[in-house]
Image (cartoon, rainbow, N blue to C red):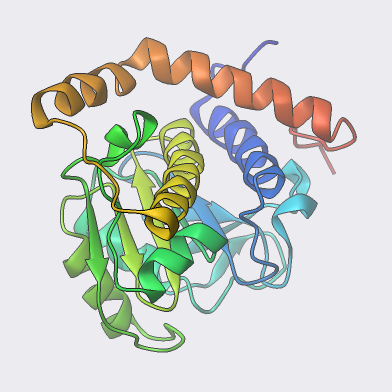
Length: 245
C-alpha cells in the first residue's frame, strides 16, 4: 500500500478509510453521525455531505466546509449540526479529526450517567482523558451549544454526552478512529461487567504505563494499518482516491 506525500491527499485518503472502518464497527448512526478532519491549523474541514451515511463515503463524495458550515469545495450541503466540531476546532488547535456518533455502548453509558472506568487494558487509552457531559441540549444547531460541549471536553480525548452519544478527538484521523473503536469496545465490556457485578478497577500505575504504550506512534501506526486492511477487505469496492473531473 502506497501513500501520497501531499498532506491533503493523505488526509482525504485516511478520512475515507476512517468512514469505512467506523461503518464496519457499527458507528455510522445513519445520517446522524459525523466525522470530520482538517489539515493542521486550517479553518476549513472535510466531511461527507449532509444526508450521507459513513458506508457511502468515497474520496469524490467528500466536501470541504468553513466554520460557518458553508461548502467551499463541492456542491452538496454540510451537516447543520457540525457546530460541535467547529467549536472544538476553535478551542483545540492541535485537534485535526473529530468523531461524533451515537454508537450503542457509549450512548448507553451516558444514559445511565456513568463515565468510562479503567476496567479494560485497551480502555486505558482514556484514563483521566474522558468526561461525562451530564446535560442534554437537544440537537446542536448553533455555536453556543457547540461551545458548551467544547468547554466540557476541555483538553480531554473524549466526552460522553448524556442521552446523546460521544465525541472523540485526536491529532490525526488514525488516532481518532482507533480511539473511537476502543471506546465502544471498552464501554460494551464495562456495561456487561456492571450487569453481573461490580467492575474491578485497574491499578493507577499500571494503567498509566499501559496508556503510554498505547499512545506510542509505532503502536498507533500498526493498529491503523490493520484497520485499513480490514476495511478494504470488508468493502473492496470503495474508492479512497479522488478522480479528476
